Amino acid sequence: FAACDVLGRIDLEDFERKARGARVAAFVAASNVTGAIQPIRELAGICSQNGVISVVDAAQLAPHQRIDFDSLGVDFMAIAGHKMMASKGAGLLLAKESAQPLIRPLIVGGGSIKDVATDSFELLPFPEGFESGTPSIEGILSLWKAIEWLQEQGENDVWLHEGTLNRQARDAISQVRGLKIYQPENSTPTMSVELSGWEPNKLAIKLDREFNIAVRSGHMCALPLVRDTMGFPKGLCRISFGPWNEMEDVFSIAGALDKISREKTCW
Image (cartoon, rainbow, N blue to C red; front, side, top):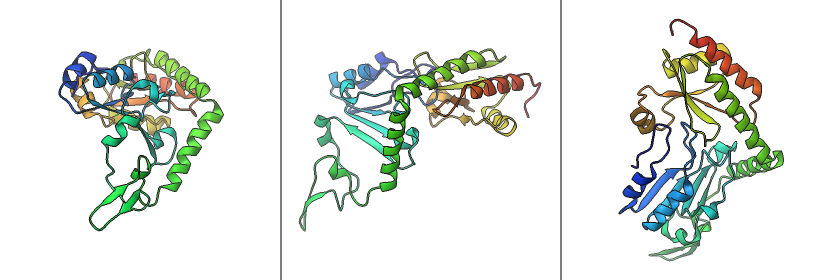
Protein backbone atom coordinates (compact mmCIF):
# COMPACT_ATOMS: atom_id res chain seq x y z
CA PHE A 1 0.00 0.00 0.00
CA ALA A 2 1.42 3.37 -1.03
CA ALA A 3 0.87 6.32 1.28
CA CYS A 4 -1.45 9.19 0.50
CA ASP A 5 -2.32 12.44 2.23
CA VAL A 6 -5.57 13.33 4.00
CA LEU A 7 -7.11 14.39 0.69
CA GLY A 8 -6.43 11.02 -0.89
CA ARG A 9 -3.57 12.13 -3.13
CA ILE A 10 -1.01 9.37 -3.71
CA ASP A 11 2.53 10.05 -2.47
CA LEU A 12 4.62 9.59 -5.63
CA GLU A 13 7.88 8.98 -3.77
CA ASP A 14 6.33 6.28 -1.60
CA PHE A 15 4.58 4.80 -4.63
CA GLU A 16 7.92 4.52 -6.41
CA ARG A 17 9.51 2.82 -3.40
CA LYS A 18 6.66 0.34 -3.12
CA ALA A 19 6.70 -0.32 -6.88
CA ARG A 20 10.20 -1.80 -6.74
CA GLY A 21 9.80 -5.55 -6.72
CA ALA A 22 6.03 -5.44 -7.17
CA ARG A 23 4.23 -7.26 -9.98
CA VAL A 24 1.03 -5.23 -10.21
CA ALA A 25 0.12 -1.72 -9.07
CA ALA A 26 -3.57 -0.84 -8.84
CA PHE A 27 -4.78 2.68 -8.14
CA VAL A 28 -7.81 4.89 -8.63
CA ALA A 29 -7.89 7.65 -11.22
CA ALA A 30 -9.94 9.83 -8.86
CA SER A 31 -10.89 9.44 -5.21
CA ASN A 32 -14.51 8.62 -4.47
CA VAL A 33 -14.08 10.31 -1.08
CA THR A 34 -12.49 13.67 -1.87
CA GLY A 35 -12.60 13.76 -5.66
CA ALA A 36 -8.79 14.02 -5.83
CA ILE A 37 -7.57 13.33 -9.37
CA GLN A 38 -4.38 11.30 -9.37
CA PRO A 39 -1.35 11.98 -11.62
CA ILE A 40 -2.09 8.92 -13.76
CA ARG A 41 0.63 9.49 -16.35
CA GLU A 42 3.33 9.87 -13.68
CA LEU A 43 2.14 6.79 -11.79
CA ALA A 44 2.06 4.76 -15.00
CA GLY A 45 5.59 5.94 -15.81
CA ILE A 46 6.85 4.73 -12.45
CA CYS A 47 5.23 1.36 -13.10
CA SER A 48 6.77 1.11 -16.56
CA GLN A 49 10.25 1.99 -15.28
CA ASN A 50 10.03 -0.77 -12.67
CA GLY A 51 8.45 -3.43 -14.88
CA VAL A 52 5.17 -3.30 -12.96
CA ILE A 53 1.76 -3.90 -14.53
CA SER A 54 -0.46 -0.83 -14.01
CA VAL A 55 -4.20 -1.21 -13.41
CA VAL A 56 -6.33 1.93 -13.08
CA ASP A 57 -9.85 2.12 -11.67
CA ALA A 58 -11.34 5.05 -13.57
CA ALA A 59 -14.93 4.59 -12.38
CA GLN A 60 -14.93 7.96 -10.61
CA LEU A 61 -13.13 9.92 -13.33
CA ALA A 62 -14.74 8.73 -16.57
CA PRO A 63 -18.13 10.44 -15.96
CA HIS A 64 -16.47 13.82 -15.39
CA GLN A 65 -13.47 14.07 -17.70
CA ARG A 66 -12.36 12.88 -21.13
CA ILE A 67 -9.74 10.14 -20.82
CA ASP A 68 -7.15 9.59 -23.55
CA PHE A 69 -6.20 6.02 -22.67
CA ASP A 70 -3.42 5.68 -25.24
CA SER A 71 -1.57 8.75 -24.00
CA LEU A 72 -1.52 7.74 -20.33
CA GLY A 73 0.76 4.72 -20.66
CA VAL A 74 -1.26 2.46 -18.35
CA ASP A 75 -1.68 -1.25 -19.06
CA PHE A 76 -5.30 -1.68 -17.97
CA MET A 77 -8.17 0.65 -17.14
CA ALA A 78 -11.56 -0.37 -15.75
CA ILE A 79 -14.70 1.79 -15.93
CA ALA A 80 -18.04 1.06 -14.24
CA GLY A 81 -21.04 1.75 -16.44
CA HIS A 82 -23.43 2.66 -13.65
CA LYS A 83 -21.18 5.59 -12.71
CA MET A 84 -21.88 6.93 -16.19
CA MET A 85 -25.67 6.59 -15.75
CA ALA A 86 -25.88 3.16 -17.41
CA SER A 87 -27.51 0.20 -15.69
CA LYS A 88 -25.58 -1.85 -13.15
CA GLY A 89 -23.61 -4.79 -14.45
CA ALA A 90 -22.12 -3.03 -17.47
CA GLY A 91 -18.60 -1.72 -17.74
CA LEU A 92 -15.46 -1.36 -19.80
CA LEU A 93 -11.99 -2.86 -19.63
CA LEU A 94 -9.38 -1.07 -21.70
CA ALA A 95 -6.12 -2.94 -22.27
CA LYS A 96 -2.91 -1.87 -23.93
CA GLU A 97 -2.18 -4.22 -26.82
CA SER A 98 1.14 -5.33 -25.32
CA ALA A 99 -0.58 -6.12 -22.01
CA GLN A 100 -3.46 -8.17 -23.40
CA PRO A 101 -1.56 -11.50 -23.35
CA LEU A 102 -0.94 -11.04 -19.61
CA ILE A 103 -4.52 -11.80 -18.58
CA ARG A 104 -6.75 -14.85 -18.83
CA PRO A 105 -10.55 -15.01 -18.55
CA LEU A 106 -12.12 -16.35 -15.37
CA ILE A 107 -14.94 -18.00 -17.31
CA VAL A 108 -14.71 -19.61 -20.73
CA GLY A 109 -17.31 -21.11 -23.00
CA GLY A 110 -19.48 -20.37 -26.00
CA GLY A 111 -18.38 -17.32 -27.90
CA SER A 112 -14.86 -17.23 -26.47
CA ILE A 113 -13.48 -20.50 -27.85
CA LYS A 114 -11.54 -20.84 -31.09
CA ASP A 115 -11.03 -24.60 -30.88
CA VAL A 116 -11.82 -27.44 -28.47
CA ALA A 117 -10.34 -30.91 -28.10
CA THR A 118 -11.00 -33.60 -25.51
CA ASP A 119 -7.98 -32.52 -23.49
CA SER A 120 -7.45 -28.86 -24.44
CA PHE A 121 -9.00 -25.69 -25.80
CA GLU A 122 -7.86 -22.54 -27.57
CA LEU A 123 -9.33 -19.14 -26.83
CA LEU A 124 -10.08 -16.42 -29.33
CA PRO A 125 -7.84 -13.34 -29.10
CA PHE A 126 -8.71 -10.35 -26.91
CA PRO A 127 -11.45 -9.20 -26.50
CA GLU A 128 -13.57 -12.06 -27.89
CA GLY A 129 -11.80 -14.57 -25.66
CA PHE A 130 -13.22 -12.77 -22.62
CA GLU A 131 -16.83 -12.69 -23.83
CA SER A 132 -18.14 -16.14 -23.02
CA GLY A 133 -21.79 -17.08 -22.80
CA THR A 134 -24.73 -14.78 -23.36
CA PRO A 135 -23.66 -11.13 -23.05
CA SER A 136 -25.57 -8.60 -20.97
CA ILE A 137 -27.39 -7.07 -23.92
CA GLU A 138 -29.39 -4.67 -21.76
CA GLY A 139 -26.24 -3.58 -19.93
CA ILE A 140 -24.34 -2.99 -23.16
CA LEU A 141 -27.22 -1.02 -24.67
CA SER A 142 -27.62 1.09 -21.54
CA LEU A 143 -23.93 1.99 -21.53
CA TRP A 144 -24.07 2.85 -25.23
CA LYS A 145 -27.10 5.09 -24.67
CA ALA A 146 -25.46 6.74 -21.65
CA ILE A 147 -22.38 7.63 -23.68
CA GLU A 148 -24.55 8.73 -26.60
CA TRP A 149 -26.60 10.98 -24.30
CA LEU A 150 -23.45 12.58 -22.88
CA GLN A 151 -22.15 13.29 -26.38
CA GLU A 152 -25.50 14.72 -27.48
CA GLN A 153 -25.61 17.07 -24.50
CA GLY A 154 -22.06 18.17 -25.18
CA GLU A 155 -19.72 16.48 -22.74
CA ASN A 156 -17.65 19.61 -22.17
CA ASP A 157 -20.81 21.57 -21.36
CA VAL A 158 -21.93 18.89 -18.89
CA TRP A 159 -18.54 18.82 -17.18
CA LEU A 160 -18.35 22.62 -17.06
CA HIS A 161 -21.82 22.68 -15.47
CA GLU A 162 -20.78 20.14 -12.81
CA GLY A 163 -17.57 22.02 -12.10
CA THR A 164 -19.44 25.30 -11.68
CA LEU A 165 -21.84 23.73 -9.20
CA ASN A 166 -18.93 22.21 -7.29
CA ARG A 167 -17.11 25.53 -6.97
CA GLN A 168 -20.26 27.38 -5.93
CA ALA A 169 -21.04 24.71 -3.35
CA ARG A 170 -17.55 24.90 -1.88
CA ASP A 171 -17.78 28.66 -1.56
CA ALA A 172 -21.24 28.47 0.00
CA ILE A 173 -20.81 25.67 2.51
CA SER A 174 -17.34 26.83 3.56
CA GLN A 175 -19.17 29.63 5.39
CA VAL A 176 -21.09 27.14 7.55
CA ARG A 177 -19.99 27.25 11.18
CA GLY A 178 -18.16 24.11 12.31
CA LEU A 179 -18.02 22.56 8.84
CA LYS A 180 -14.80 21.36 7.20
CA ILE A 181 -14.47 20.39 3.54
CA TYR A 182 -12.16 17.67 2.25
CA GLN A 183 -11.47 18.24 -1.43
CA PRO A 184 -8.32 19.38 -3.27
CA GLU A 185 -8.36 21.92 -6.08
CA ASN A 186 -7.77 19.34 -8.82
CA SER A 187 -10.82 17.16 -8.32
CA THR A 188 -14.06 15.77 -9.67
CA PRO A 189 -17.33 17.37 -8.41
CA THR A 190 -17.12 15.22 -5.27
CA MET A 191 -16.27 16.36 -1.76
CA SER A 192 -16.60 15.04 1.77
CA VAL A 193 -17.48 17.14 4.79
CA GLU A 194 -17.59 16.90 8.56
CA LEU A 195 -19.91 19.01 10.69
CA SER A 196 -18.94 19.59 14.30
CA GLY A 197 -21.24 17.79 16.73
CA TRP A 198 -22.80 15.56 14.10
CA GLU A 199 -22.14 11.93 13.31
CA PRO A 200 -22.10 11.52 9.51
CA ASN A 201 -24.91 8.96 9.40
CA LYS A 202 -27.20 11.12 11.52
CA LEU A 203 -26.39 14.17 9.44
CA ALA A 204 -27.21 12.29 6.23
CA ILE A 205 -30.52 11.07 7.66
CA LYS A 206 -31.47 14.57 8.77
CA LEU A 207 -30.66 16.05 5.37
CA ASP A 208 -32.82 13.37 3.77
CA ARG A 209 -35.81 13.48 6.10
CA GLU A 210 -36.06 17.21 6.73
CA PHE A 211 -34.60 18.75 3.57
CA ASN A 212 -35.05 16.06 0.90
CA ILE A 213 -31.32 16.11 0.16
CA ALA A 214 -29.46 12.88 -0.58
CA VAL A 215 -25.82 12.58 0.44
CA ARG A 216 -23.63 9.55 1.09
CA SER A 217 -22.39 8.86 4.61
CA GLY A 218 -19.83 6.43 6.01
CA HIS A 219 -16.47 5.35 4.65
CA MET A 220 -17.42 5.31 0.95
CA CYS A 221 -15.83 1.87 0.43
CA ALA A 222 -12.48 3.42 1.39
CA LEU A 223 -12.11 2.43 5.03
CA PRO A 224 -8.28 2.63 5.23
CA LEU A 225 -8.33 6.17 3.80
CA VAL A 226 -11.26 7.59 5.77
CA ARG A 227 -10.66 5.82 9.08
CA ASP A 228 -6.88 5.47 9.21
CA THR A 229 -5.36 8.24 7.07
CA MET A 230 -8.03 10.90 7.53
CA GLY A 231 -8.88 9.87 11.10
CA PHE A 232 -12.66 9.45 10.90
CA PRO A 233 -13.69 6.09 12.42
CA LYS A 234 -17.37 6.91 11.88
CA GLY A 235 -16.84 8.23 8.38
CA LEU A 236 -17.80 11.45 6.62
CA CYS A 237 -20.64 12.85 4.52
CA ARG A 238 -20.05 13.01 0.78
CA ILE A 239 -21.60 15.63 -1.49
CA SER A 240 -21.41 15.18 -5.25
CA PHE A 241 -22.92 16.80 -8.31
CA GLY A 242 -24.11 15.39 -11.62
CA PRO A 243 -25.64 16.57 -14.89
CA TRP A 244 -29.15 17.02 -13.49
CA ASN A 245 -28.24 19.12 -10.48
CA GLU A 246 -28.96 22.83 -10.66
CA MET A 247 -27.82 25.92 -8.78
CA GLU A 248 -30.88 25.70 -6.54
CA ASP A 249 -29.45 22.42 -5.23
CA VAL A 250 -26.34 24.29 -4.14
CA PHE A 251 -28.46 26.86 -2.31
CA SER A 252 -30.53 24.08 -0.74
CA ILE A 253 -27.66 22.12 0.74
CA ALA A 254 -25.80 25.23 1.86
CA GLY A 255 -28.92 26.52 3.60
CA ALA A 256 -29.68 23.15 5.15
CA LEU A 257 -26.17 22.71 6.54
CA ASP A 258 -26.18 26.25 7.90
CA LYS A 259 -29.50 25.65 9.66
CA ILE A 260 -28.35 22.33 11.10
CA SER A 261 -25.09 23.84 12.33
CA ARG A 262 -27.08 26.31 14.45
CA GLU A 263 -28.93 23.59 16.32
CA LYS A 264 -27.69 23.10 19.86
CA THR A 265 -27.72 19.31 19.88
CA CYS A 266 -27.91 16.50 17.38
CA TRP A 267 -30.61 13.88 17.82
